[in-house]
Image (tube, rainbow, N blue to C red; front, side, top):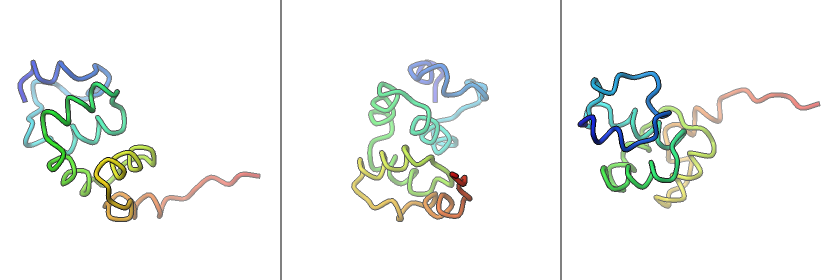
Amino acid sequence: MEQAVLEKFSENLFWDADLLDLDADKHASYIVGRVLEHGQWEDWLFLLQYYGLNRIKDIALGLRSLDRKSLAFIATVIQMPENQFRCYELLQSKDTHWYF
C-alpha cells in the first residue's frame, strides 16, 4: 500500500507500525483488524472502497481477535452469524470479570 493511501486513514490506527513497511496485500488482515477495532466511520468507508466487501469478509472471518462491538458490526454488515467467525470461539473462552 502506498504511503499516500495509508495517510487517508486516521493517524491513531497504525501507532505501532512504520507506514513505509506496510503492504496492502501482505498486511491486509492487520489493516482490516485495526480499522474494525479502532477506526472511525471514514476509515471504514475508505477500507470498503479499497478492499471491497468480499475481501473484507474473507479477512474478517479469519481474524483471531476482535472485540465484541467490532464482531457485532462486521457480522451485521456481511449478514453472517457471529459464531461463523474464528474470533468468536476465542471470545467465548475468555474469562469474564465477576460482578458482586
